[in-house]
Amino acid sequence: MSRTAVLIEDDDEAVLFTSRRLREQGFSPVVFGDAESASAGISKIEDMIDLVVIDRRLPVHASAEPDDSVGDALLNELLDWLPDVSFVVFSGHTGFHHLQFATRDRGVIRLPGREAALDRVYVFDKDQAPEFNSCIQKIRTVLDDIDAIDVSGVSSSGLVGQSTRRLLREVARHFDGSMISATALRGGLTGASVYGCQIENASGLSSAGVVVKMSTSTKPSSNGGLHTILPAASIAAPIAVVEGFAAGRRAKVMQVAGAEAQSLFAMIKDSPPVAAGQVNSLRRIVKGNVRGGIRTLTLEELAAPLAGWELMEGNASDYAIELPPRSWQSRTSVGAQHGDLHPGNILVVNGNPVLIDFDSETSASQLLDPLVLLLSGLFHPDSPLRGDPWPSPDQCVSFYEPEFFAGSSSPEWFRACLDWVVSAQSGEREMWTLVLAYCLRQLKYKNIREDRVMRSRAVLLARRASKELLQA
Image (cartoon, rainbow, N blue to C red; front, side, top):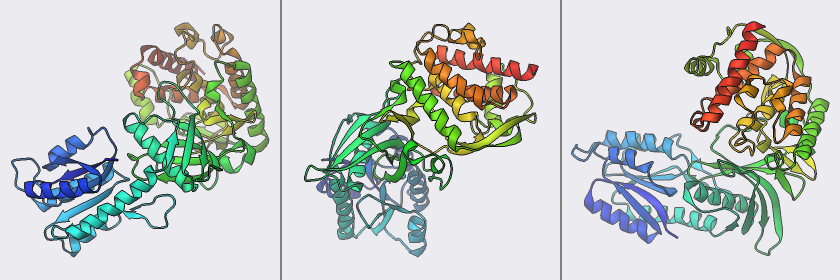
C-alpha cells in the first residue's frame, strides 16, 4: 500500500536521494521546492498525508536564496495544518538551539494498542541516512499495523472516507480487534459521521460493540455535566478517543447498552409518533434528574451558549434585523444542558433514548436543549425534513402558533418538542432570545447562506423573535 509523504527540498540531488528512500519504505513523495509552493500545494493534496520531510534551509520562492528561517517558519505553519502527522527535519548544521526549537513542546502521536508513541518531529543531519531510514521504517510499521485491520461499511472515497476508515481501524485496534464493521447512524446532506460498530478479534469472536463519532474537535471531555447526572442507561458513556494519521480528525468512542442503535433522525419523518414518544421519554428522564436554579441573566448571557453577541450583531445587520439591547435581563432556570441536542445526538437503543456527544455540555437555560431539538428538525443538515416545502414563509412568521404545524410531514414530532419547550421556559423573553440566537447563528453556516429557502426561514424566524422581544 502506497502512502503519501510530502517532501519539501530545493536541492535536486537531495530530492532524488530522499525520494528513493521514501519509495523503498512504501511512501509516494509529493515534492515541493520552496515554502510558497508547499503552503499553496499541500492543501490541494486529495489523499491523507502520512509523513512530512522538510529541509530546514529553503527559499521562500523558486528564485529566492535559501535561508534557515524560511524552513523554521514553514515547520511552525505545517505543524498547525497537519496536527497528527510526524515530521522529519533535515539540516546541514543542526545545533542545540535549533533542536530545541524543532522538538520542544511539539508533542507526540499516541496510537491505540501501543505503550510507546511517535514523536511529532525528528531532526537529522543530512549525512544521517541510516537514522532517517530507521525513522521512516518505524512510521511505516505503525501504519502497516493499523491498515492490516479489516473494515467494512464505509467507503474509501475521498479524504473523509480515507480518514474515517483509518480511524475505525484504530478503534478496532484499541479493543484488540482484527475486524470492524460499521453502520451509519446518521444520513443526510453531509453524510454520516456517527457509526454503530461491531468489532471482532482474530478468532472471529466479538470483542466490542460501540458507537463512534468522527470529529475535528480537540476539546477535552468534561469531568462533570449532564453526562454525569443522567442515568447510565440514558447516555452513551465516552470511553476512548483515538487519533493519529487521520487528516486531523479524531474518533470519539462511546459505549451503549444494546447491540442495535438507531439515530432519532431516521425516525422523525418515517415514524413521527415513535419519534414523538422518544422526545417525551427523554423529557421525563431530564425532568427527573436535572435540577435548575432560578437566575436573572442579560440577553447576551442567555444567548451565549448558542452565539456570541458580536456574531448576532453582524448577521442581524446583514439581514436588516433589529436586536434588543444586550443588557436587557431575563428570568431563567439554569441547569446542566447537553448544548447540542439535535436528533443525531439521540440514539434509540432497546426502545429508549440514549444521548451521545457531550462536547458542548454547558450550564445554561433549561430551555436550551428542547429549543435546539425543535429548531434542528428544521435546519440541521442531516434532518430528513429539511427539504420539505413546510414551513412556508407565512408559517415562519407564525412560529409558536397553532397554524405553524399545518402541512408538516411530522406534526407529532414538532408538537412533542414544542410541549417540552413550553414546559421548560420561564418566560417569553427567554424563549424569543434563544430563538433569535439560534436562527442568527444558522446564518453563519455556508449550507444555510447558500440555500435560498433555508436562509429565508432563518431570517423570517429571527425577525419574528426580534419583533416579539422589542414589543414585549
